[in-house]
Length: 330
Image (cartoon, rainbow, N blue to C red; front, side, top):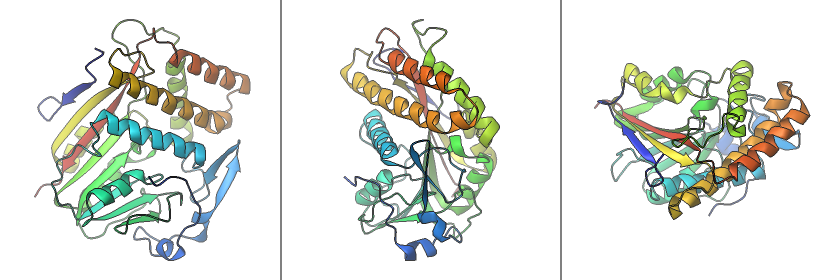
């Protein structure tokens, strides 16, 4: 990776401040979820392994929903905006989208900023956890439901957005088929996904790099326990074409792991990314690794080794983040 070049682009021709989580949620909005029936369980949380998790569809999603996770998601949101020059998306959705949905919205920052950017649009965020703020822009709503359920409504969405969601979906082709049905003719979908494998262009990545070991172990655990295919984004553009999407575009950004880049902007992004990865390492160590039977001493050693390795500026590692978008034919 050249220090001033973090992006490669693949197209059709190239392809083979709303801070703080809260559990106070409006019951009426929950009961009116357009994604299907919901129950009072959506308001519940459970504390395990020192972290908080949702109880709705318990065990469906292995990542916490507590304040530490909010910090990680917020920093990741800031990092991705820095990566694409302050933008919230790359798809050419036009200047006046009227119906936008954020699938797997998390704490809802992207949805709220889209609501402010397009005040005439109706913006909906959907997630398994009721962790979004109560005080939100008037054109934004949040629903608690599982996006892997069947949900087919009027095909009138202008833009559908997913960020780091595909790695926790069991059936991505089904989800994107549902998205295709719900988009209006000419509407767009955009997916942003990490491909969780460190790379290096100058042979400074050691063969026993702890972050590589972490992602290898995580890939195996998530597939065996949850049936998640965390490298699925590599298949996504072709799957989208097979479903019927047109104008499919694919851009890959190289995120530095740590503050090793000479360029100041890349160094800042790398510092953000180091913290995002480290918080993710500790989140995965809290539950999935323990439930998979990994010994505590091995987990502790791996967490400590990742922290040291990502602070080593002599290791010029990067991890790709993929932006894929496509359009429903007019």
